[in-house]
Image 1 (cartoon, rainbow, N blue to C red):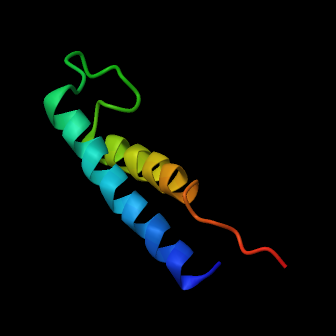
Image 2: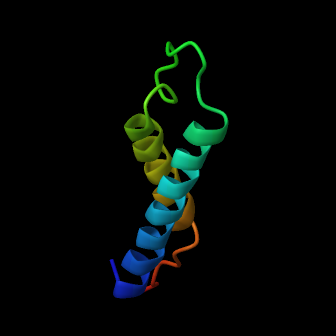
Length: 64
């Protein structure tokens, strides 16, 4: 991976983590039985995973 790809993926992880926490805070799970949104750590980690994967789509691969 190039340094540009690492930076783009890292930005995606940070944005996804913020989005996951905001989802927990504003939507969340009232009953506490939801696997992802019942705890802020779970939703933040899940959001960072999805953010990293989403932003990794925009990394252009070098052709040889």
